[in-house]
Image (cartoon, rainbow, N blue to C red; front, side, top):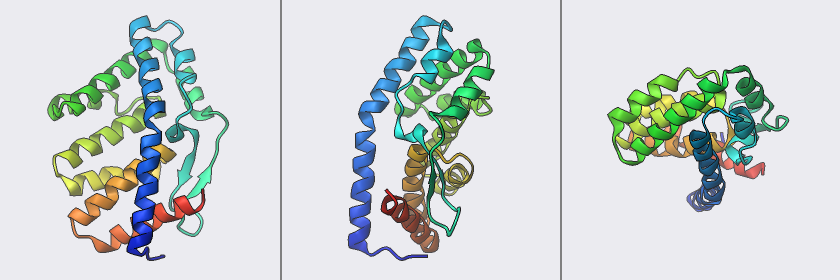
Length: 203
């Protein structure tokens, strides 16, 4: 495992923050598309879902612990897995779950954690992987914001080992670094620094 000097870490975190800021415009486009789905009902829903802007968090998968312990990136064909899963699920189900996801996110932003969690529980086993992993990240975020760092860490670790969409994994790694710092788990903190460093080194 490589150690990351503080200066190098500061540069790395700057890249990470810039990447998240760069995703804001794409996230706004995604939100607008999801709002259109809510307004239009289930009509052409699968087509809308498959044509969402290709945000970085969906365009690649990342095997964080593959190979020699560095972030190995794999690029699938145009979100093929998401398209396949979406097309196999009933349109009415996808539509209702997207609406639930939107409502849960609004409640999370308003810090209404219990209400947000109640909605997330309804979609955590969604047949659509895109919805499922976002719901899982929201669970971790709720725990993180409530300073339940040990529980939040378990959720984010589960994401990077099982649901490694690149954008989601970068956010999860960022949270894991903070969680391990809060919990004073230096070894894990260094591991996540190293993974994040290796990810940016490979770009």
